[in-house]
Image 1 (cartoon, rainbow, N blue to C red):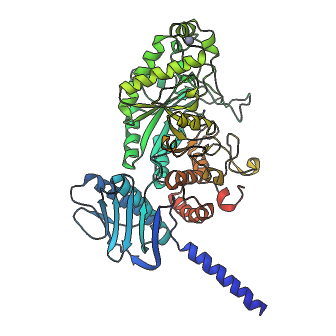
Image 2: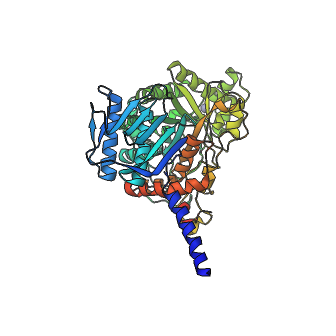
Image 3: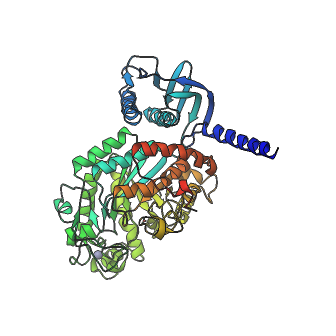
Length: 528
Ligand code: ACM
Ligand code: ZN
C-alpha cells in the first residue's frame, strides 16, 4: 500500500514536469500564448519561407532566417518570393512596429509583424520553438510586443579590444534575445578604438598601451604592448550587420573624463599640455579634456562629425561619467571659462561642456545620452540620462522630465560577480554580486508615478571589461543575465522567476547549439 502511494506521488510529479516541459519556452516571454502541444504540425524538409513579391526587407529577413535555421538545425528551407504556403511572412500595419503575431495551425505557419522588425522578432520566436520541438511544432498562436522601446547591451571595447568578428557574435547574442540597441563603448583611458580620418594619430598612439597591469591594480605589469582599433570600414560593417538584425548601434565617445588615450595622442587637449599616457592600469584618472580651450571643442566636434557619418543612430553617447575636476581647478583657461560664462564652479563647467556638445549634436540632428553624472551642474530638458549609480539619478531625471535608460549597477552590471563565492567558482569580475535573480528583479519604474513612467525608455546590461580579456569571458558574464534583462525590457509586468528558470533550461540548449559560453551558476543553483 505504502509502495503504491509512493508511486502515485511519483507519477503525479512526472506528469507535472512533463506538462511544463512541453509548454512553449520562449525568452523573453511573449504577451499572449495559446498553445495546443497535443496537436502538432510537421514541417517537412521541403518547407519554404514565403515572402510577398517585391518586399525586399522581408526577403532579407527570410534569407537570414533560412541561414540561421540551416546553421542551427541543418534545415535546408529555401526562400520563396511568390509562394503562399510554408512559413508565410507578412506585414500587418495594424500592429505596432516591433509587434508580431505567430500562428501555427493545420493551414500553415504565419509570421506577421507591424514592420520587418516585428517579423524578425517573430522569426526569433519560431527559432526558439524549433529549438524546443524540432520541426514537429505545436499548434500555437502568439501575440507579442515589447514593453520598452529601448532594450540595450553595452560592450566596453576600450579596456579590452574585441575584433569585428567578436562584436558581430555579440550582436548575434542580442538578436536572439530581441535586444535592439548595441551601446558600443569606443574610447577610454586605456585605448582609443575608432579610426578618425582627420586625426590619424588617435589610432596610431591612442589605440596602443605599453602594457597592462596584472590582477587588481597590482604594481606588476605584463610588459606586453596591447592595441586594437576599428577602421571606419569595419565600423560600417558592424553597423550594417546590426541593422540586419534590427539593432541600432549607439557609439560612445567619452568626454570630458576617461580621456587619457586622446590626451596621450594630442597633449594640447589637456589642461597642462603634456605628461599624458595611454593608461596601463584601471580606475578613474585626473587627466581629462580641458574645458577652457576652444581647441578642445573644435577637436571633439570634428571627431563627432565623423562619428555621425558612421552611425545613423538617433542617439550619440558622450559619456560624462567619472570626471575628476582637479586639473580644471588649477587651469587658467578653465578658470577663465568659468569666469566668462559666469559659472559657479567646476561642476557647472562640466555642465557647460556637455550642454555645448549637446547643442552641436542637436544642430546635426542627433540627441545626446550621458551617464547620470551629467545631472550635476544642470542639464537641458532634451538630454537622455543613463542611470548607472543605482536608479536614483534616473528617478530624479524622470521626475524632472528627462528621458532615462535604466542601467543601475545594482542589477545591470554584467562585470559583477554572479555567485557569493567568486574566489572558488568564478573567473575574474570587478566585484559585487548580481545573480540572475537580481537582474531579473529590476523594476525600471521603481518609485515613479504613472505620469513619470513614459520617461523611462528602457533598460540595458553593461559589460565593462577591465577584468574581461577574452570574448569567451564576455559571454560567460553576459549569459544568462542578459536574458534576464531582455525579459525585463520586453516582458515587463509578466516576470515570473520560476517560469523563467524553466524556459531558460530550454534556451540553454540553443546557447549550446551556438557554442556560446554562459555561466552555469543559475542553472546548477550555485549562484544564490
Ligand atoms: C560607469 O560605470 N562609469 C558608467
Ligand atoms: Zn583646462
